[in-house]
Image 1 (tube, rainbow, N blue to C red):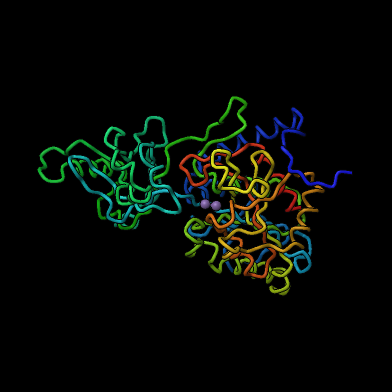
Image 2 (image 1 turned 60 degrees about the vertical axis):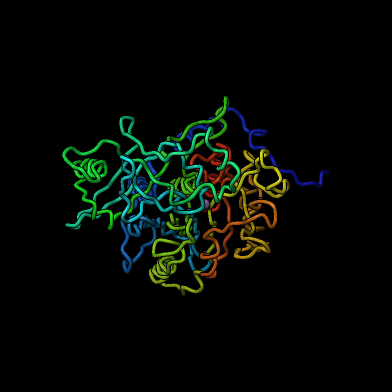
Length: 453
Ligand code: MN
Ligand code: MN
């Protein structure tokens, strides 16, 4: 009898039919990716999917009835999907899945437009953890909303259609980079240089800021925007690239925003497709990349308000409902990258195509800032996944004391809810174009589906 534990490559045990299921599922995921580059687009797209599956809008204070399928849209930036099950919520609690739908990007500043040497630029303030040099010399699109002076909300999207122009941040040519190359990356690439080129043709009959005025005139023509309207805008520059298969065998998908769409999508499909008599709360959260702050982030009391509403509607004690609830905090983790092998500890990191990866803990140094799930809860989930024949693995972000990271897990757990981190391992995480294995995406769908049953 072999007493040893080994991780398993998913492809070592799948037949042609299962492989087709993996690839077909990932075609759906790629479509999702191309439609959900920002938190607002993720909410709008998911609401449409939920409506098609029979979900109805929910308002706080309304009674929730067994059998209801509801969605709560939090300010167009966060979303709660609620399935009110027939099972006893005092005994079984609520099954909670949380992923986040914000990704690292370049936000426009509030007074962004300026002109220098006959080029018009938009100034950005980066959002989330980025390597600044990644954002130079790649095509960028602008997504978001502008609230005009008259209160009207205008949706902006430039750079995604094949005929659209894109935006661009310059880099220094290698011929003149001798000084730059000897600097550290932090010294060499400054946030205040992340300025998008938006125009180069001067407006006629203007002697001052003519190029800036030219760009403004075009924005005014298309969206009715004047410069002051940037004050009440949320505009986000994201890579103007589509999701693509990678590799001769198409094993991988490259895309912007796998973190955390690659967990959000399996969470949504599991929620919409799984037959279950449990009460299910599926959350798409905003602001994870900047610490889950604000009223659209997971530190907001909204989750506890919604759990209270469920308890009230079912006539059970909310503390009991909370204590018996269970959560998977669905967020990505680092995949082992042989090009940067010393950043990882090989036995304790997610391997590509070895399945959705559970992180018992996250955090930095001595697990600081981590949720650190209990052995009992992991034991429970292990049983659930084994019963459903899900291939999954465990990992931690990387080598101890090299850095670290956090997720929303600890904010859910604070409600007295058993919570663990689990997500798809990603190569080049937080780069403008990240990479995942298709087998792992499907494994996440299977694991989340088993959890909801
Ligand atoms: Mn994440
Ligand atoms: Mn992230």
